[in-house]
Amino acid sequence: MELRQLRYFVKTAETLSFSDAARVLNLAQSTLSQQIRQLEDELNVQLFERSSHSMNLTECGRELLPLAIRTLHDAETCRDRINDLQKILTGTLNIGVTYSFSPILTETLMSFMKQYPHVRMNIYYKPMAELMEMLTNRTVDFVLAFRPTVRNEEIESHVLFDNHLAVIVKDSHSLASRERISLTELEKFDMALPTKGLQARNALDQYLSRSMVKLNIRIELNEVNILLELIKKSNLITILAEATIYNATGVKAIPIEMPSNEMDGCVHMLKNAYRKRSSLAFIKLLKDSIAVRERVLDF
Image (tube, rainbow, N blue to C red; front, side, top):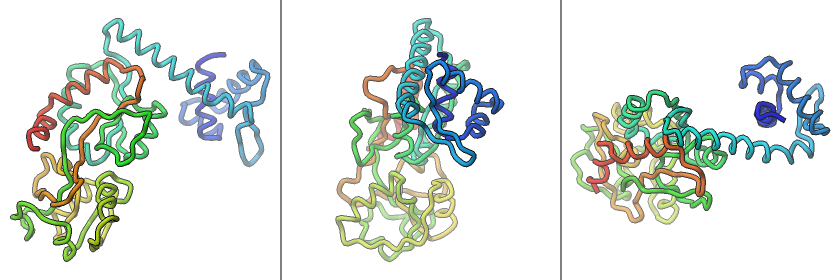
């Protein structure tokens, strides 16, 4: 049994399609089928039920899948440990980032790429729930996001900086001169909000569910950059984490008078998992970055 065969099996199990798996793995479909057949012959079991219209895992296939995933993760950890013992920062660093967290990341990305040119980086921008699933599946090494409203016992969260929800308006908006504002005062304004499921929206909805405030939501978007552009070019207002507009021009953040308004910026990692030296190096650079230090000093 070879790691390559296990990798092919896992990808085929994820896609339940030889053609899709072969495309992702950059293999000929015939090569993939042959490797899966060799694995089945060695184990003396059938791993997939095949028909002209569908493919499914057999009972043996379902039993093998988590074991194969664990074996591949252990092999990757072994390689990372050896690289780290040699004090050679190489390999791949996979980082998950929520959309709202991205503005403070650019400085650290540039510094890391300059200091560690032999490390390949994969950055995944997705909603919080998807990133946490990727973290538990070890698809990413760590996640940069605000503290989740629901705790996951498998994940530990380390606070990088304090942050809060804020009303975001364009510089020329009638509210732009305000120092603070209550949610009740926002009922008469048209709102453009992040889509349900994004962190700022989750935190806002959690509070609204316990209050009598009724916001006039005209539009919802799952792309923060487009949302901010819409705010700049209209009288719509939105509610986001204050850090979301770091280095942004044409908009202003107004603190909200609201209890439980914290949106702590965190790095999320699996408990009891091996930490790559490249992960630790990146996180140290992020903690020392101007973007994070300014956020810490602001509150």
